[in-house]
Amino acid sequence: MELRQQSLQAQRRYVPPQVPAMMPTPQRVPGCPPGLEYLTQINQLLVHQQVELAEVVLGWETNNRYIIKNSVGQQVYYAKEENDCCNRQCCGPNRSFVLHIQDNLGQEVITITRPLRCGYCCCPCCLQELEVQSPPGNPIGYVIQNWHPFLPKFTIQNERREPVLKIEGPFCSCKCCSDVNFEVKDLSETANVGRISKQWMGVLREAYTDADNFGINFPMDLDDFMFFEHSK
Image 1: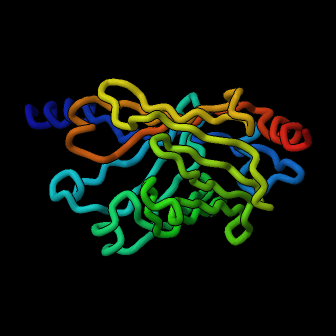
Image 2 (image 1 turned 120 degrees about the vertical axis):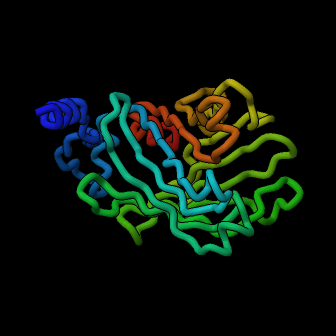
């Protein structure tokens, strides 16, 4: 009788693992690549990098994985990095990679490719570059690093490699107890239209893991803004 009561108490205490809430699938939008309809309904994305046990315990660099959510915590996408072991261990943050981004149905909707580049101001001929494809195999944009002696600067280009937006980061990208913000600006760099933030995760997580969380803010009418900005 006593064992049965203990078993019943244990069952009452059991809390099943929570399944992350999924953002409802939106209706198709004419002219929008499949899977990107989610982005027409939100103005913020939260990117949570998953903590890898091998990295924490052994310091062994593994392929990064990310859960991408909207502002209310619903999962929008899942992303996973692809590259080889030697590349990860030897080249660190400058390594080449392919990032596969899937929707909640498991369909790959975005592919981001970055070749091996330097990224330092002392090597202006070998700066970072990203290619964004959606659907996979169809380039829709690029992010190009611009040379600057002390600031991280980038240009966002459309599928024709025409500049549409600028990104500017801070002089120091290592801040204690505060977020690191990259401002997304118009081509004249006089007006902010969005922000990419590396969020401070606390002393322990920052010290023992390299898992990062990011916040991406952008206006819902960004397509209209870029159209009128480019037509000036």
